[in-house]
Amino acid sequence: MALTDRKVMTFDVVGTLIDFESGILDYVQSRAKAAGVSLTDKAILEAYAVAEDRQHHETPRLPFPSMMAPMYREMAEVLGLPDSHADAEEFRLSIPHWPAFPDSIATLKRLRKKFYLAAMTNSDNWALSHFARTLDQPFDDLVTAEMVGWNKPDPQVFAFMRGRLSKEGYGFSDIIHVAQSQYHDIAVARRLGYHTCWIERRKGKSGTGATPKVQTVAIPDYHFSSLAELADAVEAGK
Figure 1 (tube, rainbow, N blue to C red):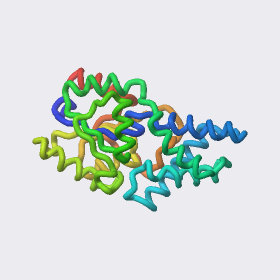
Figure 2: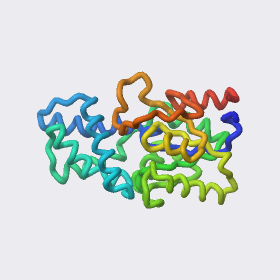
Figure 3: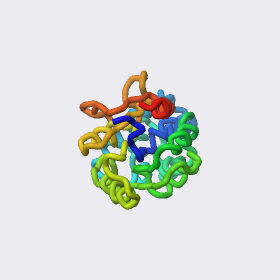
Figure 4: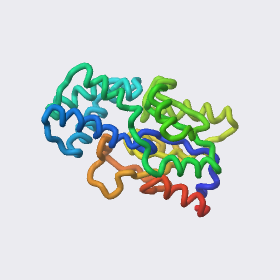
């Protein structure tokens, strides 16, 4: 089945369309500089990934913005940063400043000419409203962890989205799920039988950055290093 045979693209947002690693680094490095602490970007991103993995297991029903304060406190302890309530809360409040990847806005406009675009994110409604604005409002539908009551990789998030799409007249075979994270998206989507497209934003870089590690990399149906490459493949009829 070709990409162009699908009618719906469901998107992970944070990490796929929004450059959350840059957002995290901007905030944490600013706190480190103010405290006179020297940190590598690698150390910050790895500390975030470990904290997120732990928090996901402890509070799997919380949208990730609600996890950010306890995650910051864990990171601060590991990295030797100030750990005030204000620092932890301001980490969450940095979300509206997280940038889109350079190719996200233009590419989503290209894809929207051919597909129904739906966001499926572990964000809450507040965070997604900011991300959608940053991305120039590209989505036909929006599903958040706040709406579902669970976070990906829980299958209930996918089931919730499928229910909404079925009301719009779309079947399972119409959908392809597009995401960066093996941990949150690609592995579970493959287990559930979805066609998947892995946007490997860290291709050529060492490690998994701010995304928790997985034991085994799931093999997607399509694999690109950028969103623009996906749009190119669609327009080439692949």
